[in-house]
Amino acid sequence: MGRFLATIALIAGVWSGAAQAQAQGLGGLAQFLGGSVRDSRDGAELLLDLSQGVPWRVFTLTGPDRLVVDFREVDWQGADPAALRQSERVSELRLGTFRPGWSRLVAVLAAPMPLAQAGLGVDGESGTAALTVQLGAPDRAAFDAAAGAPRDPRWDLPAATAVRPAVRGQGPIVVMIDPGHGGIDPGAEADGATEAELMLIFARELREVLLRAGDFEVAMTRDTDSFISLEGRVALAHAAGADIFLSLHADSIDEGVARGAAVYTLAEEASDAASAALAERHDRDDLLAGVDLSGTDDRVADVLMDLARLDNTPRSQALALHVLEGIRNAAGQVHKRPLRQAGFSVLKAADIPSVLIELGFLSTAGELRNLQDPAWRAGMAAGIRDGLMAWTIEDAALARLRRQ
Image (cartoon, rainbow, N blue to C red; front, side, top):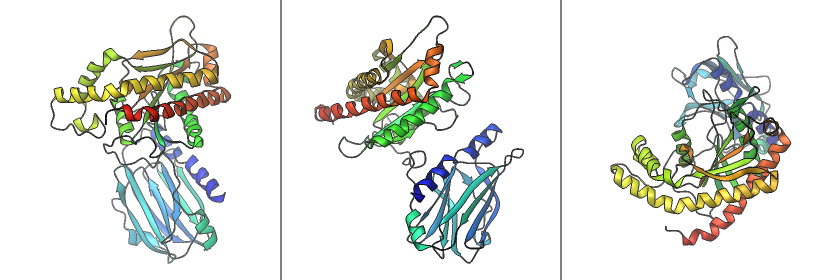
C-alpha cells in the first residue's frame, strides 16, 4: 500500500514542471546546471538544478540497491558524476541517455535507503527548476517492499519501431487514445471551455477505466496541453504497437441545436487519396507497421496500403458499431445519424482499426454540461469500454479468416 501511494503521489506531480516551463515559453532540452548527492542526517539527499522543469519520475530497485530518476529529457553536458557524488552512502553515480528522448540518473546505494520524499519546484520568474530527492535511514524490509519501477503508459511506451500489432490471445489489447487538438489548436470553444481541454480530461478518465478492466494496455498521443501533428498521432500509434486507435472530439455548430455522440470511420472514397497523401508526406517505413516501404515508389506503396485496408476497413467499421452500441447502452442517447464516414487524417492508418468519436456538441448547453460532469463522463467511458470488449471478442473469432 505504501508503494502504491508513493507511486501515485509522484506520478500525479510529474507533469507540473513541464507545464510551467511551457507556460513561460521554454523549450528544447533541459540543461543540467549543478547539483550534488550528499549525506543527510539518516540517509542521503540528491539535489539537481535544471534550466527548466521537465516531466520526471523516481523509484528504487534492488539487485543491487539503487535509486533511479527518469527525465524527459535532460542534457547532462558538463555533469561530472564523480564531483556530484559527495556521499559515502552512494557507491556509484551514473548519468546519461538510455533511449531517444529519455534521460536517466542512477545512484547505486551502499545501503537499502527507502525513498522518503521527492519534489521538483520551478521558479516562477526564471523558469529554472530544482529537484530534491531524500532517502531515509537504511531499512531492508521497507526498501524491498517499495522497490520496483512504476508501470505507467505515459512513460513506458516501447521504442518507436515498425511492428505489427499483437495477435489476439497473445496479450492485452493495446489502445491508443488520441485527445483531439491541443496546444496552439484548442479546437471548439464555448463558455470558456475548449475541446482540447475537455478531451484531455475525458481521455485520462477513459484510460483509467480501460486499465481497471484488466484486458487493455493504454497509451495516449498527448497527456498535456500540447500540439501533436495529425500524422504524428498516427505514427505514435504505430510506435506503441497499437491494436486500436480512438480519436476523441467534441463538435460545435454555428446554428441550431445538435445532440448526441457519433462515431466516424474513414470514408471509402478518401482511401485512395489518403494513400497517395501519406506516401507523399511520410517516410516509407512510417506508413505501414511491419512493412518497410523504403526504396519503393508511390505505386507500390499505394498497392500495399490498399491491400492492408481490405482487411482493416471492415475491422474499423465493426469497431465503430460496437463502440456506438456501448455508448447507446450507457448514455442512452446518440446522434440521429450516429455512424458516419469522413476523410479525417487521424483515421488513415492502413493497418490499425481506427474510429473518431464525437462525444457531443459544445455549442449545445446541455451537451457542454454533460462533458463537464464527471458522472456523465464515467458512464460514457464505461460504454466505450464495453464496446471495445465486445469488439475484441468478435475480432478474435474472425481472425482466422483474414489474410496473414
